[in-house]
Length: 423
Image (tube, rainbow, N blue to C red; front, side, top):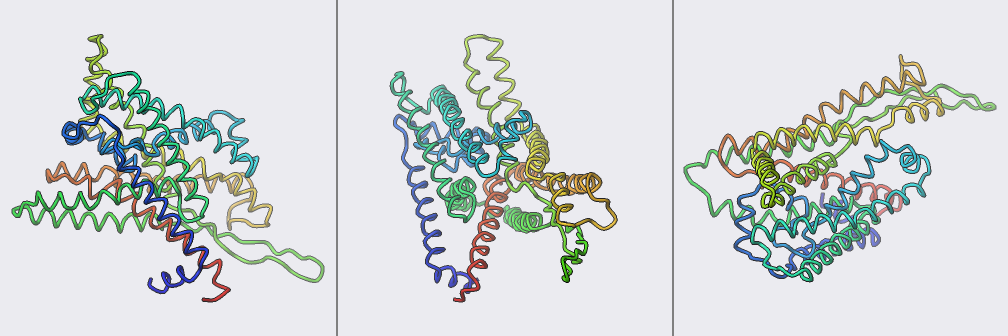
């Protein structure tokens, strides 16, 4: 490890990239601690203590919501826009053609549309959040001008974070959006651990040791599944060109157990946040029927059994959906056939595509069930031990570990690319 760190700092270009990313994350954390005006801190703390979906939204926003900062929505609207655009690739053939068949120019156009869609979504989500916070007594502003200023500032904060995320991604060391969420989670760990020690009950020492063991097992499981893959053997036919023979070798096609990474978790979290937010917003509606229905939905989503069950189902669904977006067995089969490759015992063409589709479905089932189980694990632990475990497990651990693994891989790739130069 120390040798790798030494190598990193010996390469000027790589060292500058890492220092630049750290500087960007520091800028994000500074912005996340600049509060908006008119916030009632005590009421804000009480609201977060009594509402689990706001706690999840705070993780999702990168920690900017806990103090109603200028970036209180984080990259949430950008991720929501990405979900909508990914769904459109499945529904609208023209969008799919632009994304998959027009190469780099098509992807740039697709990303531009995602950015433009982020702005109205940020305005809508900010206005909804401001209305919710005002109804709960967290924001004390009342004039239309003040509300408009907050909506504009928070929307600009989301666009600013979207830009920072793209700057990070351009450096080729990790995904910018994931690293911003990662920085928000990690920044909350010291306060979470100190809070745990302050409320430590000596009579529950074995419970805390059990939670620590579960956390370590969870981390090990995340690493194992993230790194796990099934290798499909591939053989290449011999080709004769002139007096030389090419091919005749064997290789393998790696299929990852968790092809979608942490994207399904983020997608499912964003979907789960909306019903509770809208219900809380409508609970004080003048129409009694709407207010009663909103109260029922809010109570339903505060029920941990229902919430965790829906969360689990959405994660499984989004894992299959995102895997279908990023993994195209037909195109892989065509590429293998063009290169003279084939899977032993399987006919090239459609048969190979059907075989890869079948194998990927089975692998994805394992990966999706694992992702869902890890995500709802804190709720299970909390139900069994009555100890607040959301801060030490589940979604946060999964995002942190996955982002660290992916970032380390990209750094190692940069090192390998320059290895021939020597150090």
